[in-house]
Length: 491
Image (cartoon, rainbow, N blue to C red; front, top):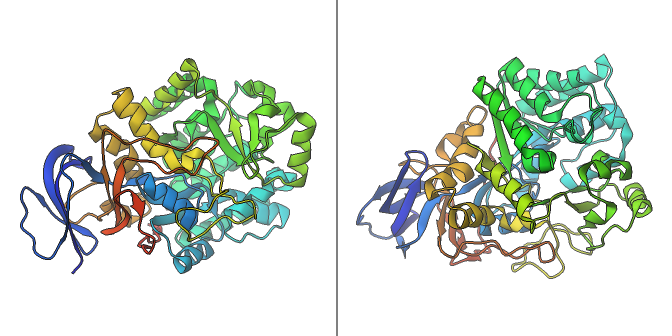
């Protein structure tokens, strides 16, 4: 029997709202006992006195889908990383590939609205690869309105993906921002009917584009209220920019009216996407108060020089990952916007983590430490530690109990309706999955920067997945691949 005993830590359980000093006994991947001075023979015992012990972080928005990326996320306290905003297609292939290669932390995928539309409208075959999926961004065909027959075809494709275990439907509405709002409602009607969440990168808000077919946040709220389904608003900080107070007000009103609407944010003023995204067209940048120089190519560190350079890059490599500076992390007013997004009641922390790219074109490795030259967005390496530093230690806006509620408990609850396995995640109770983090409250912080994006977080001393160490003494356990695929079950 595999036993681990964490001795004398400050055990924080957002499931029961308790914060106490106790021992935690793990047996065969589950929490077997919690109490003082547990007497256990044959356990791997660690003294964690003075450290925080809590449920591992559940990231609803991760695009890493790789061993290298998941290891950076594990060092940031993540025990479950889900590809939900974009999704993958076909999910059967995505799960098979991840299980064949092995993963250090748990994983799962939504059905990809974008890839399903591209199959039907553009004739492009999907291969469950996120990097390949970015290449569709520069193709205008998939961004067009659907005929009735096309709409039926890609809705049917999504429904078959849900039957294959997809965790919901990922909707990149912001990447096809002129499509008929009736199509967005049709997707949410399908999701509500079969009882799964949708995860939306909303289309442009009215402040950015007064001609938008519908304000993106209003559209998501309308879908939640009209069909009674679960609608998750992705990275509200990056889609709202300096209009965060208004969009959060829309979400709050929808929730007050009974809508099952959830929202996430990450603590950075720059996002990352494929350079071919519709909202990065040179003529669109001014509405956000940015210029081509606010865009940096991830793989090379090259900053876009001007509009002609941007047009060239969008033409030759529309899937090239780039960083987009939409707020200034160092500006007090912009930083306050990020903090307000994090402080929003019941707001969830999610990373929008991106894969690691190396100059030779590779995006994964089993080597640790990671080979030199790898680049990504710093949110891959530091989202959760940065949020803890900002909101618990510096701002004192969250207690540790509240921090685990937002990073572990609430995201797991988003998945309850579609995936029964999540009932045992995001909290610490007897019989719960032993996905745990042990944190030094005084030291925890991010180290990743835009120029040194793969520096792991510090102060997250141990991370266990299903009772197995994937991080021990603040380093990766290189032969640990306990991550499991989490699949949906239609009701």
